[in-house]
Length: 358
Image (cartoon, rainbow, N blue to C red):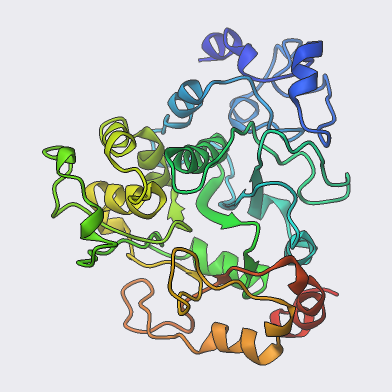
């Protein structure tokens, strides 16, 4: 195994060439002292399994990345002390306008409990300061178009990069307009202790559900297989591996699910129903308001944000199952879509409401 990994060191950047350096985001500080350096000749198993802490940038193609991330040990017990982490995966166009909220969310908590991954548009070159939790957390990214296969590619890319860290046990997809509804400890315990993944998957008989099914998908995908769901998911490690390992259903979706069929609403919902229905709760834990109708949910502005509004989201919706129980203390632990103008009132309200440090 050691010889194999040594022969593929080019997957990880240690001292990139000038051309490679120009491709990297501005917030990446290169170092030659990586645990994957060719000068390291006496590494332990833990050294090899540990994901590089200095930066996430690598030279793997998507195919190489998915192949490597799909590897899973057959022995259930880990040969080293493993603390289960939650991987927070942000899919954004550029900067995160609500980053200060997330800075407070993570502040003071053990970094062994979480990891952060950021997928941005390639042309975005700005980066956070070295003191930010988002510093050096950007992964190699590609252009994303709403409603097209590139959106699924980005989600799978985030999952695959996060799977390279064997300590990541839960994987949550978030947008630049998402906020947490509770403090870190509450959300961490909610996710880590769950037996099931939270990926919305349901049979929608309406034209915007079954009506999007393309008969050319048969026999690989039948109408009875077809599901709809929210793009914003949270999954456990086994489900994540199966999502990025799929080579059977993805080509069919890419070919036959094009607008007005939107892959981000159907691909993973259908795939988890085919592959891991027993591991899924069939619901999302990211709250959103669709009351306005249309293709996009309601966006909240500064004037909409109040303590009463956030408290209603947190506690009004409690008729949800958790680990087989009929009711839960809450249904949602994240919410969207919050406009950048909501940052100031959120920073003012959340310390008291969520228990964040001011």
